[in-house]
Length: 150
Image (spheres, one colour):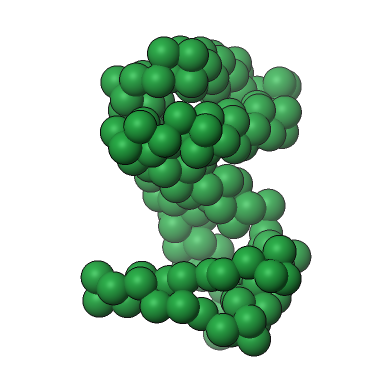
């Protein structure tokens, strides 16, 4: 991807990013992933899935079938990854697996029929899971700091 032209959105306008800026951004993203806790990685997966769902929805609306397909596949891959990390010793994992399977079926439906409605249904669930996960992370952090002796 060294020859790719990369743009960023600033104040509603696209601005070309230089190669050095792109490399620094790419390095920052890599470091963020490599230093993240498992909880933060799960949050990143939820956020990435939401990003790809938005991209897919936009591209379906614009008639960009291939781009929509690619974004839906990326979102589906993220859901598969989230599902594969479940510890089935816990009852809640069965509920999460059912939600992930539902989301996957909606993504497949959206990809086959190139419709935004299944994406919107999937997004509602993924956003809810992301928000719940974020809240749980904050509660755990509060408990950890509350129990620390200064």
